[in-house]
Amino acid sequence: MKKGQAVPEQASANAASNQIDQRIKELTDWRGEVLARIRAIIHRADPEVVEEWKWRGVPVWSHAGIICTGETYKSVVKMTFAHGAALDDPGGLFNASLEGNTRRAIDVHEGDTLDERALQALIQAAIKHNLSRRTK
Image (tube, rainbow, N blue to C red; front, side):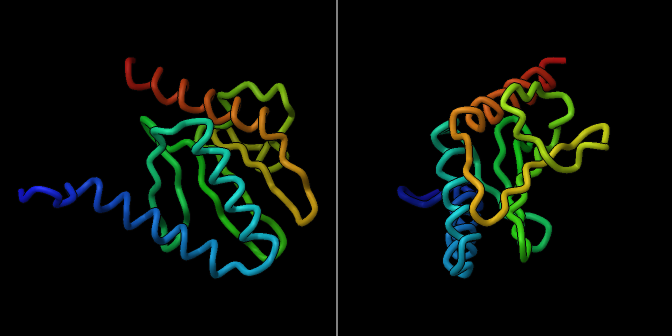
């Protein structure tokens, strides 16, 4: 491999980050702002997070497995935590997909405020959960 050439994983991560950048730009209303804010919070919670682009256009953040996704719909930005049901949620952020045995979600509507500290704690709990599953 030539010096300065991206390794395939880096190239894939860079492509995914670029696609997320593009999605945020395409969303010219409040949803783009919320998705950008969520992304920034995730990066502050975990500087080693890996950005992915899956399932025909869904931003995904991973560390030792999927942490969460960032889906955008007409009236909501949805953060779905892959193993949310296994996480403590002392901030009471989970407000959607509560009936399942695995996933939990946070629906953010226009005008909602995000508790950054609680969200960072939830992201870090998801990473800890992912890492604990690897050692079993």
